[in-house]
Image (cartoon, rainbow, N blue to C red; front, side, top):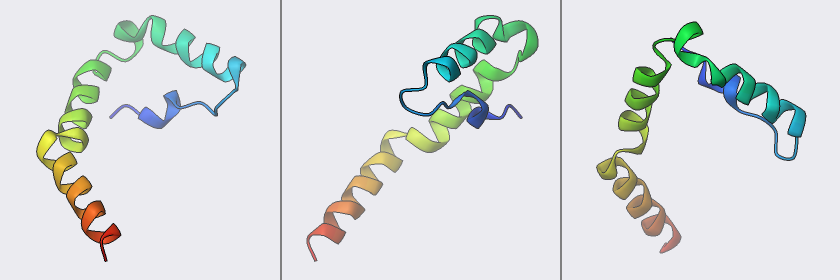
Length: 64
């Protein structure tokens, strides 16, 4: 599995951002599964139903 955290950079760190972009430029050659794994992560973590449930739970918590 591809380590997605390897592509996160601190806010305002231009050098780290440039390095992450460099690693992603040729991702198909060195990480051929990145596209498929990224899509699966989005489906698992950002699916509409899951997002609606999380927002509803937050509103319910704030309403207490």
